[in-house]
Image (cartoon, rainbow, N blue to C red):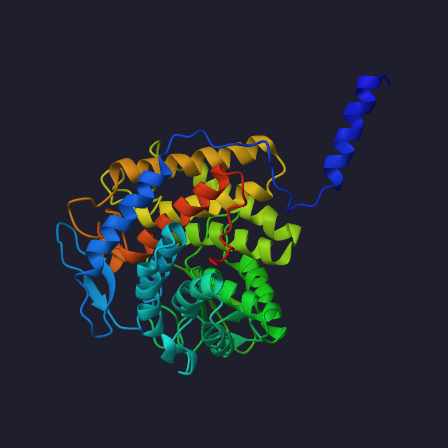
Length: 413
């Protein structure tokens, strides 16, 4: 073995010993996106939206196709946390206390969720996006109390025999109620449990989150790593009864937003556990999604809709995946793969910014998201969760450009 071979061998051995969470520091973004201009756009649009919201507990959810009118909901709606979360992100971006004041107002609308019996699994979307971001930025102890109480409320839906959280504790078509149903969206709500377990809550919350992610990994995916939207379990034995869809095209199709929840969810679970099996799985569920994307990187609402290319797109799924890939790239030791994730995320954000912004159409941030197409609901609409993840992805992108980690963890002084 010559000197060059010895050096190469030492480098390889060192890389093999590095933890799976190591960041690829030599992988850079290509500066295709003017992130400051896009964040300024988000500030302008959100400022205009603020003026339209009644002062009665109303929270914006969506704007129908070719409309300028927001559909408002109250704190009970599963989307109620995205608007205050978006405002917290704008505070983080600008350091303007106008946004802190607005975010605090809408966040506090959600306080009853902490002490109300769980309506469904969406407490993470509702409370961690609002109170969670608020606490991260302000360290307000009252926010922390709400987060911890809400985590305990969410934990009441955990079924030990199944090993997952019950998503819909009520009659929903095709769910064989009162059997136990779990939907892919639920992966995102595990972050609330992880955080609470590490910040004063019961350690059992961590175990519940790991169990949910593990059981979901085993039962929610086909051999090609596309996901079912829903799995129904026998609530007494834990046996899988069936995998079906609720919002996708068919039971065997890849519903775009469902797959986006999987990509984001398993990336987050790896971050919280550092278990390599979750990182490996995040790569696998990302691969099938990326390989099947259209050239412009914005998915159709369902990858298997036979109406493609005349099917609706889903900008919200693109925003979720862009944000997830920016984080996933930092856990990826393969520099070629890390670069692909960064390039694809940047391309998604560039396409969303160039061709999907609402601009003069309405006061949302993005057009062309799809909510529940089988039910005829929110098709080709502006939807608040698409906006939330768009701003999150832009902030993560900006941090990576600055050579920082993409996670948003710092606090204003």
